[in-house]
Image (cartoon, rainbow, N blue to C red):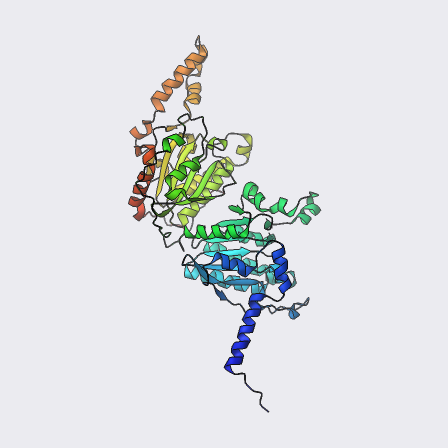
Length: 521
């Protein structure tokens, strides 16, 4: 007797049950355990990231086909990763999220193939890719197939670099080779207490070196935000973290062939910054917080600082001027007097390269006394790292405007996007001091014999300092020689920047034909 064929209603009911099983996961207790750790589930995270109701899932019914070690008896739908696309403020974004409830979010062959597919789709569609990471690394039971899956992710990260924005959000553990994918992306977000990243865990470290350290102490969010520089942003909870991921995406284009979307607000382009003269002391030896200057200049005082807790002597931020996205690089006199060191150079270089990749104009606020002297800096490669920042600026073809607020000494002045390395426009405040070095140091070198032979060395030294300052460090010396385009009233800084960026909006610059450059490493 022929078996009856299920009718349409029965098939639809079966589909509904399968979809519900895929969404709920195989074990309700696993969801409870995830919440007990203070963590959201993969789907809860996706819902927070994307606009309500916009998520379209890809391969929700995918299952692995591995055998051995009991895997053939455990084949949950999704295979531990949720993939698909949706929108953020109406713009397409691709996402994949590890589901820690299934195999601890560990990556196997099917799991990896789902990620490969969504990465390929993001690149083909020219839309940003966000990874929500919460996984235990490679699925050991699947052996080398799992490792090959990571290789496929790494090569796609690399091919997509500079083509679409890639954002990694660390919401759980990320160990071993898995940690390299976030390192290849543009931005890394981490949440305190729940997320960790390391190549070798505390147990291996103890076995090899004898050092005792906790998971957070080795690779927690604060470690990577302040010590290693791996994490660009750090948060106390997932909700705030994902809210800022959405904000970051609003400042970025979908791909390198588009411009970031403009957002018109109520902040007038020609608004005068009346408090600006009070924010920066005329005395070059007095510190101030350059972030207050940034707040005064940008639209509505809003900006997103990148790497806020690492290399604080330079500030890198994304913001808007007259509704258009800009990248701001500024020396920070409130930290180490704003000198450039190994870390600041690396931080600035990476940010400049990112902005150039995605057609985001650069505004550089200069107040730099030089490069940090010291044996540790020289041995740490300040020449090599300083050259990274120099290379990044020289290679950038986006609109570039620099404003010298106060000090601009020596090679650090050149590196901070001076006219001589290709800045489109360079402005200076009347408080600027552009020179090879400060007047005090220069006088001590040039007039050392005259000072030593004088009856009153200190009085002679003071006189020679004033002579040097009047001759070579006065505010209009650089303007007289065309090294700055104008000396402007600080209160007109925002208006001048908005006008200049509008003029440069159609800038087109070609680099020599080459496969790629070879920047200093």
